[in-house]
Length: 496
Image 1 (cartoon, rainbow, N blue to C red):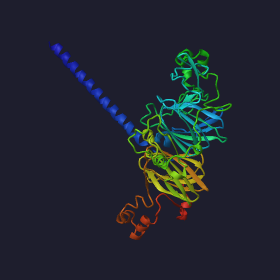
Image 2 (cartoon, helix red, strand yellow):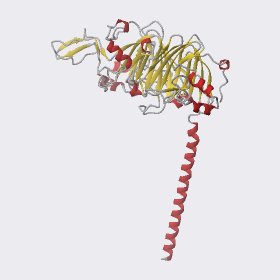
Image 3 (cartoon, one colour):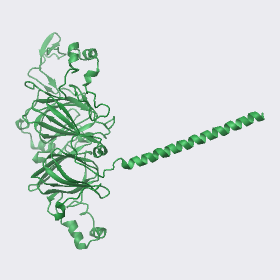
Image 4 (cartoon, rainbow, N blue to C red):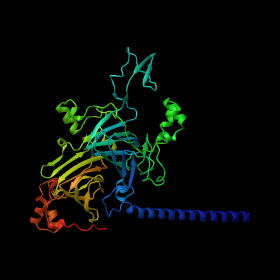
């Protein structure tokens, strides 16, 4: 009995010992993990040095190229976005693809056509002269030769598809995740489109990588920006299925199904169209009938109804930021700024992105400001400017020239000032909020203008007269001449 009691006591002691050891190890591991997280978290967005970024990868195709910025660069990674530029040559067709993220695009140059295929929406563009039911009978199907067989009668039709739009320089295009999109350059000059992808969006259910899904064509270079896939050619979606499955699903023969896989096609994702490009499309903007003034006013300033006016199939997704009639800030001697948010384009409420278009003349300045609720990605479309950016530590993290084709991220809360150094400086900013807000450091609506003189006097240890000058000397709200101390002309080296 004593022996059993002694053995029971020893087992209980051993159990307590191991339980205590495991608890201690778990606590130490948890503390170590917390410590490691504590060390990592402050360094997650250490943006003590910003740089004007150039594309890191170029994907060449038969009729153009795709230039991709490194989304692992700290300023892009911490902004939660990636960026790409599409250069489509004349008669070039960017083959349909969709992304795992919301996308906001800007047509920097050229003109062309754009089509999107929204899941579940009908083909509202039809060739009505050819597609006519006979004797009131409904159309039921068609053969491979373009002939329909409906209740014993054959009917001819050319095509029917979802909406096609004309696009031109200045157009800003919102695209939701999973929506297939294509572009065609029907002009003589290259069509240049820049796009920002919101990797941190709540709609992206994958990792923080841009993932294009191609419905046609092949990319021999692969996803060079994605680790592990640098050397793997990227094929279209059909390539992954067995040809028999494709043939059964589309009711086509096996040879046609194999062609859909583009196995021997090395043209890339932008191909050249031989001959006419026959899609059903509306007339150009200038050829459309004049609409009523009420419709124009409603379209410019956005709709403020209950959402029933637009379905997802008919929702407007394009607006032109170069249209002078919709400019928000305009000074003939300085330039203009146009803003596009969800009040103008309701679909932006869904993708939670917005845009700003700016154009200023030489020696014009955009007053110092910061984005209160968004990160901004600034892309230069023309000219050069001197830009300074200041972080939360009061350090100048960027001080230099930016020029056409370069990109720089402006994190939330970082103050920025822009001054044109060429005859004209033009840029577009993509912001990670459907209704981005700015605050200014100078001007009639600035934070200094809203402070009492006593706060300014005591906060900066200046005289009441100096405080009045600080508060009231700048009467503009956004744009001003860059006349000021000569020391501004000699920028300091950015501090690390």
